[in-house]
Length: 455
Ligand SMILES: Cc1ncc(COP(=O)(O)O)c(C=O)c1O
Image (cartoon, rainbow, N blue to C red; front, side, top):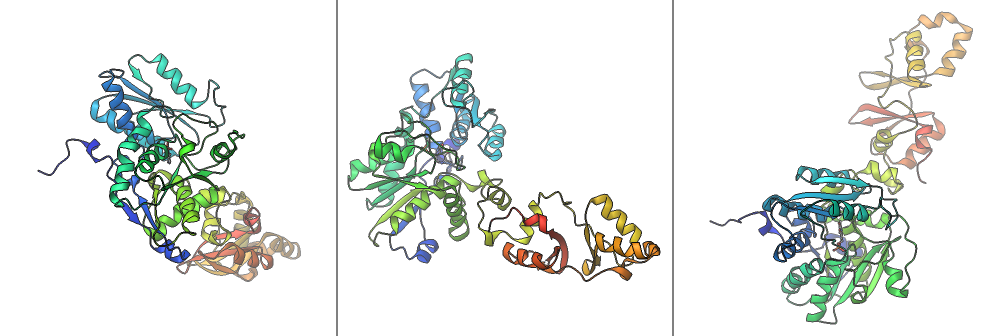
């Protein structure tokens, strides 16, 4: 039978996949290959170190049957360790910050782990920092193993023994550039050490978020004050033992906006659905590759799957909230779904044969000052509170009239995919616009809904 004895046999030996459409569009001649670490059984590059650190502890007798694994993680190392724990019967406690996506937290819980969340704002070294918390829990838990992925030699060693040789083998030794991120540094340090031993001319490029220390630390030896960024799992605010910046030839800073945009593009144009750190790395790979010829072979790491970030950068709503979505991608539908101007989420409308008094009551109760008049989901007119009240001052009997007798022209209609500039232009002329989706009116946007949109 062609079988595996357990899930752990699926870790590693991930394929290299050529990038085609994006490089062609950008006129890049170099060959760029994605190392598909998202195809590991825990969907990330960190599966390799989970098993490597645990094997090491078992061999040294540090970890005994029935023990508890405890680690500070941005999620993926936890998932890698939880796989081993499930197969070998260990308990797990993972300590993470509140920056980590809800998907990764739930994933770990679904694998049977206990998850402890700390504030991402806690200072390194303070008792409530996630690393200090993990250490304390490990000290208080009998028969526990706290690997400390930031300093454990089995982390880079896993990549020296597996990731590096796989890339060398699968490119027939033709790799010229290796691009990775730096979180614990295990991936870049271990893989690069192997590759440089094979061919010292291979260039190693680290892609790091603006706000992280690594670029300045490598170039000046100084550690700047780190500033917050949104990409998960990479960059640091302190130097860590496993990040060997000397082996890295160049570190390129990448913005959150570029990281998320490139991650989204890999899904849309190459079918590679990945996390934000992969976007950071791919943005770095493209910057390097644009100056290279067709003989260059650039390999970059696809760190993890996009499924971990469906409520984060793969959500237009989240991107809009973080002011990271390009204005042309802010559509009428998105504005309607994410409006926080206090207007009701449901579309409030009246029928043309409704009584004016009832329409006025609906407007007062729902707090809207203008309302579309719809018949079978088609716009036939509109009512504005101020106009109705002016008319009622002249003739109070109108309260009992039908809406169709006093309604004004309907609000302008835009398609659900119309973008923010078109909507803003319409709102110069009209107090509201209606949204049409497959010939049905599905929403309304008023001036206050577009006040906070980027230009
Ligand atoms: C999503 C993601 N990308 C990249 C990395 C970086 O890998 P390394 O720790 O080997 O530097 C991590 C590490 O946790 C991660 O979670």
